[in-house]
Length: 450
Ligand SMILES: Cc1cc2nc3c(=O)[nH]c(=O)nc-3n(C[C@H](O)[C@H](O)[C@H](O)COP(=O)(O)OP(=O)(O)OC[C@H]3O[C@@H](n4cnc5c(N)ncnc54)[C@H](O)[C@@H]3O)c2cc1C
Image 1 (cartoon, rainbow, N blue to C red):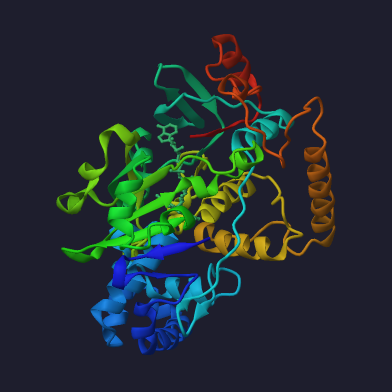
Image 2 (image 1 turned 90 degrees about the vertical axis):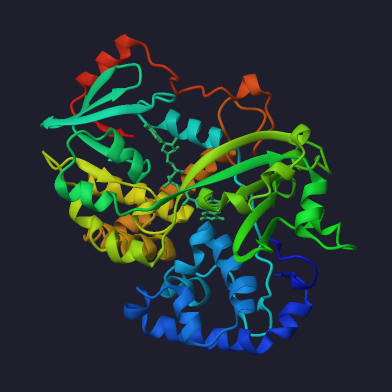
């Protein structure tokens, strides 16, 4: 993973020395001491935004705006709320051996280039999972309304089709839950409305000139083809940033398909529409734009840890009939790992066994999540037999994935490039027929995941 922050004199990366890191070396060393402090006094620092702690320790604007904020924004996708991210969380990203993403370098802040790997085509993974499970999945059926009539849950989709379930796991944003859930309890309403969302804008494009103009100085043009992530500050507001990705550098599938130098493909994120006056989206060549999209993103500022995280557990499994669970990265902080863990945690609460007890790191993170977000401990914790069984099961699953039945080309581990018509999900109904819905409704136990 190669990251480039800033431009020209202000540029620094995780792979090469730079003028800026040389100039700010004493502050980089002091930052290491501050991280140790934040980790040691975590119970207090969880409520102190990073901007305040940096000011208390006397860091310069240059160090804050050019190094710390862009870096944290990138780690967490916290965009322009980055100054308000909790300082204890930032200390974990650098110092916690189980959670850290980069090693802190007292010389250059970041000096390692973590290896990245690409997942197989996820659609194939999910289709294989759906094939193996005995459950039913409906796609393209947005939930419009959820009611809890006393026992169980009634879910109505946008077409007005209703189904009844014993339990529900909401895996969409807190905003959407509040929109679709009829008669939320007072506590659900109060707590879910504490999760704060911002409006961002994303353009997918092929405009290499835009990338060069915005992200590199003269003579550094080739960087655009080599680095994965780019972060720049707006000159008029150095504490606000814009992020871009060179998606071509992630296209392992294309290489496997024999395309060594895929054509350039970029994605640029304009953050927090209240800063729209700073955005340069109109400078992207319209003829090179592939798609544009508005998106809602939550930000785990220190307020998130003060007003939502410690209390969210009190609505997990609640509602009439004790049937409602909440999953998604907003339940703790904004990473994909948390999003995945939150789904496994809801499954554990509903009676499923945690699937990776043999994996020490994964299970310790899961236990932490379960404790903080659900206020419970794992049922099979410490059960050696369960751990052994799960390890054997996982090995068998990997072996099955290596030799998929009836698939000559590609597998879960070796992702092929398939023409669009071949990528249609084999086992997932895009719009289930009405008779199937009646069949589903008859099943004795069921859980809806919205
Ligand atoms: C630019 C950027 C870069 C990031 N980089 C990283 C990174 O490098 N590493 C990392 O760990 N994290 C990263 N993140 C954060 C990470 O992507 C998120 O934390 C994660 O994807 C959130 O997953 P989620 O399942 O909670 O929510 P989402 O992925 O938002 O899923 C919610 C789902 O709910 C569905 N939905 C909405 N309304 C309805 C409805 N009415 N009915 C049914 N379904 C509905 C939506 O379609 C969506 O699929 C990044 C985020 C951004 C924006």
